[in-house]
Structures are given as structure tokens and as C-alpha cells.
Length: 196
Image 1 (cartoon, rainbow, N blue to C red):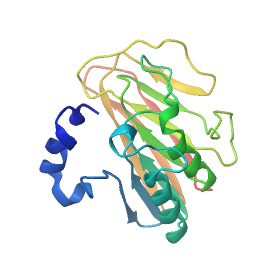
Image 2 (image 1 turned 180 degrees about the vertical axis):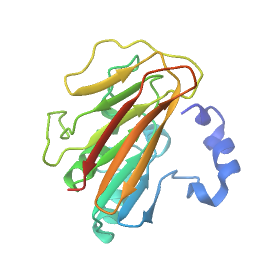
Image 3 (image 1 turned 60 degrees about the vertical axis):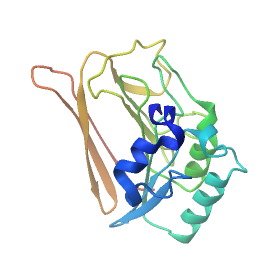
Image 4 (image 1 turned 180 degrees about the horizontal axis):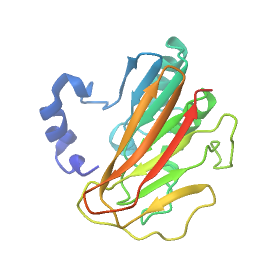
């Protein structure tokens, strides 16, 4: 999100070029085996919104319909649900709702400087073990840590003292993940799931 401090996030789009999609949009999709991966733009004010009638949501719905796959993963910056300092972001609800309606498996976010994994949730944040989305907030790259303001009901793992990365394995009809801490730290978290 700090990229938009410069006009139209020229640093990001200048560095990644065509790989980052149309610089006026900042969202795109690609196939990876049986998975459809969505890189979405949660900086909604900079791309005309993320509401139900926005261009980004219309594009997402059309791409989901045109590319039916066994498994769906999406990522963007601001988390829909978070127990961290910035909290949950309703501005990206249109993205989450669209993915939930399509049966997506995983959403990856950042923004809050912590690690948090949620149980599968519906678009309203209700526990939905059958068809809900598993969300990961991974803001553990090394700048700083943020406090948790109150742990949300479906949070299954959370840590705000360890830097590290999330290792993910995508299989034809399932996934696994493992939080890998930097050397000298003990916190880790593992999870797995099957595609809907």
C-alpha cells in the first residue's frame, strides 16, 4: 500500500513491468496446474473501488466463470479479517464475497505486522468448515511487529513476536502451509486443507 505514495505506484509497476499486469489496474490471474491464482488490488480507492459493482469485482467474477478450476487462491494487501492493529477491512469485502461465492480455498494478506491463520470462514466471518475460505495474514517480513487488539473468534494461530515466511505447497486437490521462523525463533504453524 505504501507504493501508492508515488503517483500510480510507479515503483512497483516500473520494477515488475508487464508481470504486474496493467498498471492502471494492478490485478491479474494465472493458472498453476489445477489452481487459479488471483493477484488482486486491495488498494481500492486507487483502482475505482472493490465494491460489488466495481470494475475489479466484475473482472474477478468473469475470470472465475471463464476459468473453472479445482482450486482457487487469491492474495492482496489489506486483510478482510484481522485481529491485528489495523483490524478487519470491510473495503475489500467485495473481493472476499466474490471468492467465497466461487468456492475459493485460500486468501493471503499482509498489512498487519504479525502472523495469523483463520479457520475457514464465510463472507460474513462465520465459521464454515465445508466451503469457507482459509485466510492467512503474514506481515512478518522484518520491519516491526504490531500488537493484537483482540483475537477474533475464528483465529486459529497468531503470533506477533516472530519474523519469518509462509511456505506453501499446492497439490492437485489440496494444500499445506508451514510458517518458517528466522533462525533462533521457535514459533511455527502448520495447516492443510482440500479443495472444495
